Length: 459
Image (cartoon, rainbow, N blue to C red):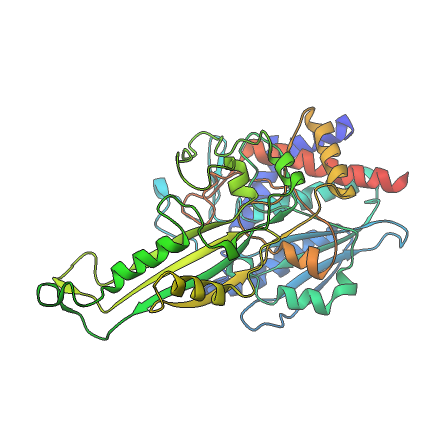
């Protein structure tokens, strides 16, 4: 249990405005990983913001080049108190998505923190600057309280998470000993909902692919040729319904997980999704109705059509188009074999009468998950429940994707994710915001976890 006075100090960081003022400085750096200006800002953010914060924690700070030219550098802070103590690896990402300047409500600017009641608006408030600042602040409070952390610390920052973490896996593989730790404790992604403290243990994977029905170079008059020329748009629509039907049910056996493990089913029992004010209501009759909404979102695979097009929908002409294309994404859980997905999709389409539709894999982000019954998840859940005084949500993984596999599969450590945001935070969109109550509670929870680890190490 976190000492009462330390809990009060954590709460005071938010109540006094100190945390918000510090976050405002972080938001002021336009660290877009997709622009040249952003890459300059990222370099400054590493040197002017993160390096001093890590140095103040007694870390030795090193910057490492990215082995992938598509990505930016990595920053690592290391504090070794004793070889006998456990080592914690923390992670955050310094980059943000495009600021969408001019698209925010009420004249807000993405690089200026704007307060409206409990909402703190600004790009990066939720993803990921607010979240890694919570953990850095919690570590700072613990160090001031104890005079030491009580464990060894490694804090890794990357600068390209929003563009798929280029080079992170290669960097981790090349620096396994440098990054070696007993456990990852990190914060990214959303809670189950705004009111529910959440611990999640991994992420679903994401397999992106394109379907292309490129039948002829020209378009032909629909009155002169209709009924005798195959329409690529009609063909593509039919092909897609053999993969995922009109009610969202995945129809390709080779792209389904082998089962829903009992531990996952039990963890998701009673979990309610879309439970925050303003959340969209889950649609009835959508997806595999043999599963609960939570099981569909966190324990199963879904196939989504991200984009679909042929000809010009705004200015259609009376002609059969020559080509139609679609972009799709498979969100998948651990246990799903996707290495042969292109062949599986191609053969499935051909078997259903669509050999003229080409398949091209455009990207893959692996799924990964820490064992729900492992020592570290059970320990962390116990700590969090002792602080909240009630049950928390323990999710096997989030529905989206994070570079969790780098830590669990490449570095071989259990991963604990304690998010300090919620599904309605509008990350990646105009009006991204952090909720002050979540920042306040999150700082208490993070401080409690680090304090419990220090006390456990002492014992």
